[in-house]
Image (cartoon, rainbow, N blue to C red):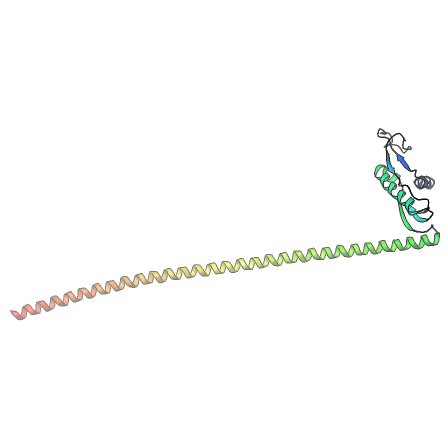
Length: 211
């Protein structure tokens, strides 16, 4: 299995200037055979200047020295394109550091990258906790808003009841006023009858005196 991985890594390291794939290769999707060279390229590499400024990259975690950053970038880009077509059959290529690969430097860089990834994971976890805390605050605020709304509704109901009581009191006062007016009219009528009776009595006395 390791020998197969090494062969795949060497194949990616020596990627040609143009990688070809057949538009009619239905069999290539089901087999690991070499890509036919009778169709359009799926990855065309950028022409790099003939400068030797080595950089160290990783091919599926294994160090690989490329003659320049341009060459390594070509391999990184083509690896990503081929992975979308062939999946995990194509190794992942990425930049590690400037300069040729060396066991000591590579070990240090990989340790630093691992530490950086751990820090990123910690930051991600902290960010998730902040998001969760913010969501809890939003929920608490919504609960407070609902409670305040319920209190407002209760106060409004009390105000409506008080207004209804005031209207009923006004109606009672108005009814009492009407009863008072009726009683006054009855008193006036009785007084008029009494006056009439007294007048009749005076008239009768006057008649008696004349006789």
